[in-house]
Length: 332
Image (cartoon, rainbow, N blue to C red; front, side):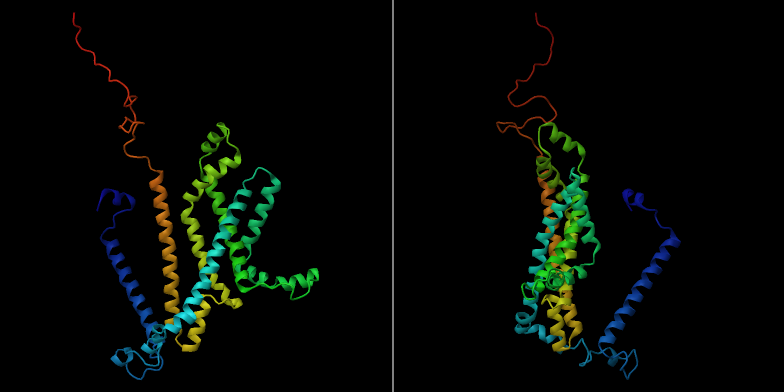
């Protein structure tokens, strides 16, 4: 064990090592029991079995269970993907991408608004952010869908004057809720930038708007990139709430497919894998952007002078200066 590792925590003794091994074995054992129960339960051999629990017949794949090959066969047909999966995925990505752009804009506007020196901008911005951040997302979606009814009951607008589509309701709810959370993320990122940079910008005559957009916001976005991406992942997963208002997104498509094919578990597994792949891709893109920004922020290893010749970083001598003669013995 290295010295750095031993500093971070105490090296376990003999009793602690035995205890850790025991905990590991118990955890693995309980996990295997849980997986076995899930397998036998969806295999329909846990309650309907006629043989012993440790017999091969009990653990064999039941043709009537969820693990049978017939339950996975629909995903090998092209009509399943063209009729259910791909349309649902397109609707999910459309809602998520649209809401992501709008939520980032919403968060920037109201995050900057909360930092304004004018109270008539700062107070309403804070009230809007706290209001939409405190309301459940599903309630925002329901309220958006009910806007025609509200307009009719409150403002006597005839019914049928306008309609709110399921896509618009989902995008509006996702934008308001996640945009309010992102507003706090941007505000925290801007406040985390050292104040000396703002003071230096003001000392050279830059306005507050120029300082905000050219100095503070780029650094805040770079430092808060993991939090921003994490919230966008939450936004993507929350788009599944459109299922409640019959928005044909990915989860609803898989639900309809599972109802038609009676393969709930395979459909749930495939749907979860698609969500995992999308979220991992988004996380990888964020890591790539973070590393790219980190590389751009590093100084070059060998600074050069105007003519291309290397110059000393800490020395006062450039490439055009003549070397000074070292003192030697005086010659008469």
